[in-house]
Length: 426
Image (cartoon, rainbow, N blue to C red; front, side, top):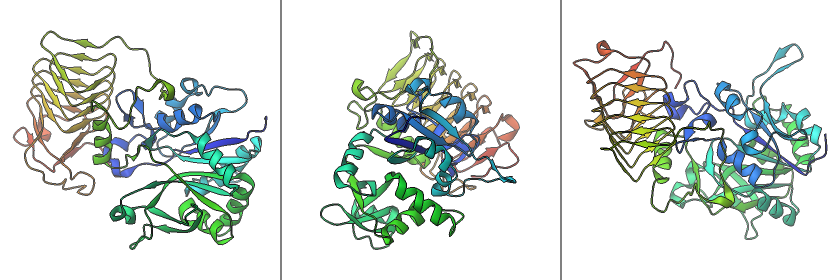
């Protein structure tokens, strides 16, 4: 392999349990976003737009859809003989296989892959954030500072700093301390989970820490270790849009932000395109009595009803007399005539019968998962069916091919669940 100046390692193995049934069979980075995209498209596109042409994608939880989506990297121009994209799943080493047990442990288990390219620098990324970032500028900063580690940080409101890993830095941005979710934060520089390491220093730290912790993690172990050992570490201040869509509310809100007249996050910039693996679809069809206002509607959709302030993925059909408001409808969903949807998320391939109403009633939190579904958003899992004339409240969860007998008196009150699987680990 030809030596690379910098390669990227993209951590994409997480479940994203706070997204509930959206990640029951799908890794969080593969969850659809903004109609035609998936969350992992954003860091992948950032890589190729930044000139990073070698990307290792570390997968673990429910990787089938994610692996299929990435393929050999054609949409991102990463189908290359020297470099390109490589899927790095846990594999057998010696007598038995070993799962990735931490963010740094995952990198440690792929030392051989990185050594093949013998890079000067390694860029560590998370596969579950929405943002645009030129990593080449961060690398220039790293070189200018002649440091061992550069950590991208975002200035957050001081009252929210206790929710993040905080980097305490001097006036020249040199980091002298890291605090994980401090009760009394000293600064508001929140780590974005984006790192550039000098490879020789990172490799040494990974090998050493693996002897101490079998669940080695960058925030908990590697960063403190390198700081304690006197490594030079700087904070790279990022001042653009960045979102961790790790909860139902934040995921919904980030999608809704896309449909503003002047969105904070612009998908239409030619100089920084977001690429994805999308089939060619027929054009959008809008029926004679249809109404579409302030929405993102993807190719292949057929709209005969009303769509307002919503995001529709490819091949969604909205029947006559149906109304979709403040909602996310993913690929291949069928919304039958007469339906009324308000503030809900419908996952891929689901079917709603005639005159189904979703999003009515009070804001009672979900009785089974109150910490996940508590902001008024009802979620229908992938490939689910809701029969005709059913009324569904807020903070509800429906998963599976449900029938009339699953709804008492044809309704599901706010905070209720109909989940037709034996085990749901959310």
